[in-house]
Amino acid sequence: MARSPSTNSIPQPPRAAAAVSLLLLLAAASLPALATAAALADCQKSMVQQLTNTFENSQLNFAFDYCSDIGDGRGYTCGVVGFTTSTHDAYDVVNTYVNSGNYSLEFDPYIATLATLNVTGDASTKGLSGFCDAWYAAASNPTFRAVQIAKIDSLYYYPSQNISDTLQLTLPAARGQLYDAAIQHGVEADPDSMPSMVARVPRTPGMTDDAWLEAFLAERKRTLCHPSTPATQKAWCASVTRVNSYEHLTATGQSNFTDAFSPLDNDGKEITIKCDLNVWTNYIPGSKDQGGSGSGSGGMGKGAVIAIVLIVLIVAAVAGFLAYWRLTKGGWPWANQRFKRVIV
Ligand SMILES: *[C@@H]1O[C@H](CO)[C@@H](O)[C@H](O)[C@H]1NC(C)=O
Ligand SMILES: *[C@@H]1O[C@H](CO)[C@@H](O)[C@H](O)[C@H]1NC(C)=O
Ligand SMILES: *[C@@H]1O[C@H](CO)[C@@H](O)[C@H](O)[C@H]1NC(C)=O
Ligand SMILES: *[C@@H]1O[C@H](CO)[C@@H](O)[C@H](O)[C@H]1NC(C)=O
Image (cartoon, rainbow, N blue to C red; front, side, top):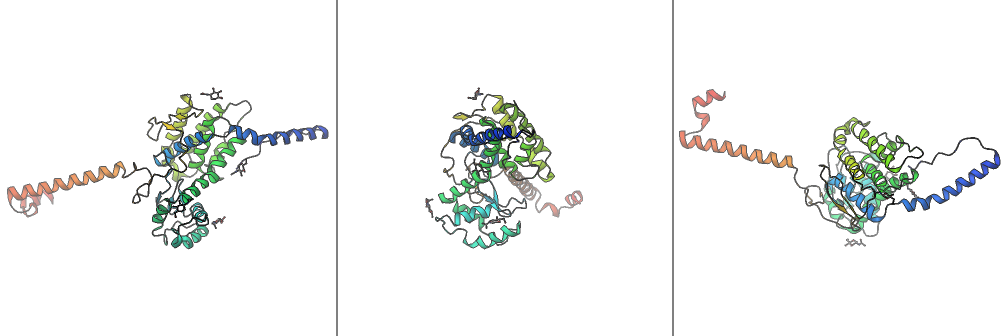
């Protein structure tokens, strides 16, 4: 994804050209050192990832055991960043784990089907009955969790940091923002992806990290509410709260990501996130029946609880009415002529 920095295209006399090439070579050679100096420290990386987990799963820790068919046409969605069985990444994770030397056989019944899906890209979950149980069981193996963390790095974290290096961003909030955007928007070539948004926010000479970040956050909000894929528009536009959260960090002087910070959660409530170097290994099992949300605080949605309470109340009211009628008038209401006239 890293785009090469544009070089001076003005024609140069040969000797000057050689000198310029040498300078460019030296500059290129010194880039990795620059990049290392700008890289987020482990503490900062842990805070950035806990914040993204908060946006994605309403929990600080990684949802290693999550697995569910969320009906988005991608088969099962599983693990720390929602690897899916109809794209290549769920199979990639399983395959790496199977070949890790510490595989405990959970996925044996599914490997053939996964390999087929890796070719067809089919969203069907046929032949995968029990797959989520296998994923949940495998999550208790530290090797499987380490494979998932390594895939986050190779698929999202490193690409996001390489683009940060290309833009010469040193501000931790800017580098963290590009990781969060990579997780939500992906790093493919489509117009809504993180690299495509970056391409729409060129860094002009003299532009500070803060100014660039502000412009990028505005572009990300625009993309979330006007994506090229209309299907994602509603859910995406509702999630501008996670962009507001980064704006809150910059507005409150918290762009440097020291040992703790106070961003906003999805409800716009300020939360405190601390450096946690155990975040990559800490496993808090979620509930298996609800797709292993990994939080212990997930559970049934508020809407489902309200619906159940309403149904119980309505059933109780009807039963009470019937009991009252039976006791006071004898017989059932539907046997009564006047009641029949009323309801027909
Ligand atoms: C899955 O398919 C992709 C794309 O064809 C391929 O690059 C990858 O190697 C396959 N994965 C495995 C584990 O075979
Ligand atoms: C290897 O797998 C077993 C489970 O089968 C697990 O208990 C153990 O901790 C794993 N070892 C490592 C180094 O991950
Ligand atoms: C990121 O850059 C490093 C070296 O700086 C390189 O090894 C790695 O392959 C790059 N990753 C991606 C995804 O571009
Ligand atoms: C962040 O760190 C930079 C470099 O050390 C410093 O110049 C800047 O004032 C700091 N910003 C805040 C908001 O602390």
